[in-house]
Image 1 (cartoon, rainbow, N blue to C red):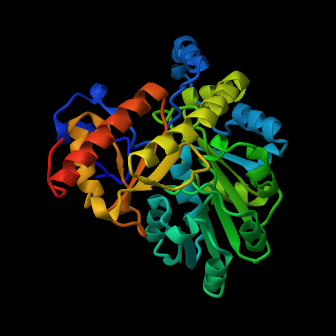
Image 2 (image 1 turned 135 degrees about the horizontal axis):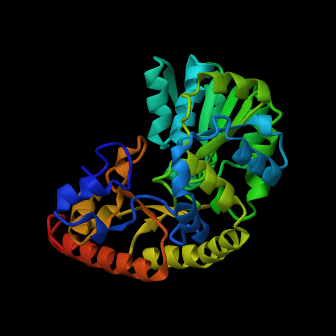
Length: 368
């Protein structure tokens, strides 16, 4: 199984499974910006390598100041971490909810963090008949037993923003709300949808952001959260010392000023996403409309194709796709793919079409 460790993008497991060098895979299983990393990242690596003899700033002051300036918030409301994963775990440990409400399907690390603390979960369904969009009546049904909601905004793997009316009701519910905005940078008119600024003064709202997806630096591990300064102080006291290394801090500061890269990314996605959705539907895939840089789709019932079969066939051709049936709430027909550059997307479409034709002809047991 490619997702042996719970994630896409595991090129080491892919190398073992398909007997191909890591460098030969076209990775659609992780949702990185194909335009990145920005050129400034190369400059940081070239110019700052001698500085790794120094300890990093334990308070991450320069990056927090840059983030505070960008989003017009108090730097004391920001905590930087070793990727969003550290922050997810930290929030659950400090807040320690007795019952956490999760939308399903959603990112598995929310559930893992709750289980580590011995907490309990209740599921809020995201249904295909609603295009996997969160419905207030389903959230409302969980209110009597939930003291914290942990939700993706946009959600992974569905790519959907939470409707504004649902967010408004959640903010008035008296429950703590954690929003994972790891992919918010890819959303058009980001400032109209993000609740990051509100979180900086709210007693009940926490927003997590990732810097690795948009800037395509997952190997660096860098994320941050925004919350009321009082809560940030509690979280900082429980954070592992030196969790954000020197190069990560320098890269974070540098990429935040790269407005040309941000503009290029949004222009690319604005063209490529509708094109890829149209092409995927043309070859018979059922694609969920997405607000971000990845797509959830399913194979038709009549095709008889399962994602596990498809993943094996595609992997042997050097293309990695995400088994979305591993997300609770999705069945064996669901797959998730990133959106990449046109040349790569054309290769993906050709391989998917060939694989579907071969498996359908052989009743789901063929080899492409």
